[in-house]
Length: 119
Length: 365
Image (cartoon, rainbow over all chains, first blue to last red; front, side, top):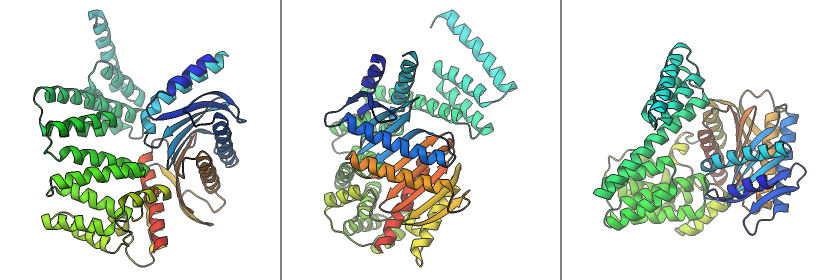
């Protein structure tokens, strides 16, 4: 578990990242590192809702499942990555360029997957 | 590097070169390119990626290799320029280095460089113009008021320092009319025409701007409004020219959708407003699952962003084994496209954004 926490904490230092969390499909927080003012419970609930809704509509349409979702909003950006039974949620500020943090996000995903398999 | 290590690498290189000739495939080109990159031979890696793309134009790995090689070349050029600047600073060198930082997307270095440039050459407007361009690019991408404000301030400063610079005037005029400060924009565009009547497209641009509604000259308020709505107030002259006069709304949306569908790799495209949908590409009928997926995802993304207090979700990209689904939303107008993994995502999102921005324009009329 500490390896997942380490991966999340490291990702938090990438440019523009306001917070990162690993949440289970049913909306529970497995690990998180968030800026003050961000509530892990709220984020996990919303991320679970967004991924489950999207996945259900994709699955019903015969598209399979979503592996990654990128969202740009007026005051922030978010990336949600499907892990085995959970999601990695990364929140960025509105000025961040998500593409620039791709390597860090991919690195964190690989580390979390590895740690989950070992656990 | 150790001599034996070097010899081993050269041997491996010769083997890969031979393999690329005998069995050309994306992976052989990529393997060879990777070795060139490891040896710091970015120019050779670039040539290898270009050759590979000529044979396999849809290969994602080869595009990534090309991108990586070019980044390496730019980084090296940036180091050379930095060294030259330390020895003998010159505005021309600052400009070239700033351009490389923009291409590398290195905003922090760009800001530091422009600061140094303006300190060393306080009478040169170039630093403000470059900084204004970079800020403007981010503003057009994210529609964040703060970036817009910074862009306008930088460009205004560039214009004040060098009133005869056509580029600063044009950029300033364009951003001003697109956020709604039409009269203010006209002032700059007329000054641009007075400077040089042969400036390309200036007459058409002025004609386009004259037909737009002015929303005052409180730039800060206009930029905040753009940020709140998630869309620019007026379309670009080019977007407006694509659908001249008459039955604006439908024609404009149809042409916009056509442009999206024509992008290489786009399989399906739709423009939805309210309960009506316009479609292009491999969509059988109104029951096509793509349409439902787009609506459901856009609604969920909207709810996610609002509840998280990060404003309106304007762009969403959903990736999976099927490729990508790109969605752009403004108000009740939604444009989306399903595309392959190797499709130019930025181009698709830009066209989709123009499409929904055009919808806003026609609603206003």
